[in-house]
Image (cartoon, rainbow, N blue to C red; front, side, top):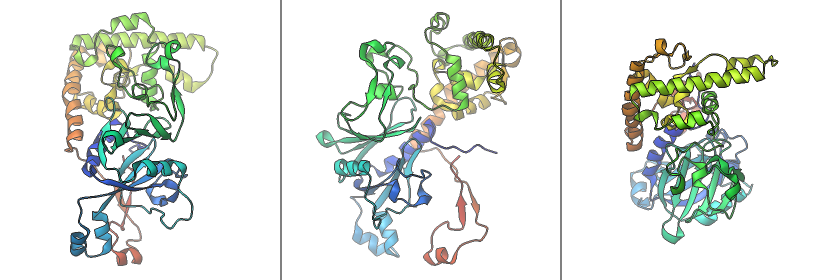
Length: 406
């Protein structure tokens, strides 16, 4: 059974950013928080991290639409777009909603802030920050009147309202970044605080780097929530202070030859083997089976490529697995050790993988950015068919139950 996604990954963000750009130029009419939304529109049970942005199309003519429409509902949808944003999870246009206009409960403080600063401003741009990072910048207005809504789709998530200079005006969650995570020295500037009045620290929240550190490969933000595979990759990465490892990495994997890539893999496997042996020695009295399972055995290619020093970690698990399959590695999850590497994955195989990473990766990302990528909607038929009310009101697709996105 295919494991269902619970949140967007970097590729989903790239695709949805391109889709959302179709409503650029629309004016923000109102903002509703999740407490007023229908339960069918959000997986956020509390509704505190979900918001619905009502955007009006300024170029639409009410009169013309009313003439061509069969009823008022069709005309209404032609004149507006509804953008759903759920902090840490997703963002997309939707037609399944209730705005709670008749709800007696007042809007949240954050929704009020959004209304105050963004109402009647046009959505001018939507940008995915970093290198396929799960951070999206929605820019409303232009010039001195511009404001930004920054959506973080990793970890606990966040939704941040800033002015045109990225000074934070309001946010859902206050937290800190450790300066040492990117600068290497916490004593110079201390922890970076994400809170009202401070400038949004884009170089800490994404893989973007400042000019001062542009020559150093940028690791992902320390607060990014990882899957089990990404957690194992992070363990492989280990301490950047390891002299043998740091001195050996001269360039990214994608720039290496097949033989160089094979040597890189050997080095990583040796490092992992030494670290695993040290951990087993220090925990020899520990009888926890789950920990032993994680420390024993080899490493699969996907784990290695998800390391920041591979240079392709931003592809994410799905695209990396696609490249592995294209290269002929029919079982991307099969593990190999330093002793079995030459037999199970010889240098020639790594040459094919490098070709796939160089060709397939940019091709897939290019299709997503250009809008040529295609997706699938999964659903199943309702056992009882269409209800009488749905048939009477001609509600589209009311005979289907839509599955969560894959």
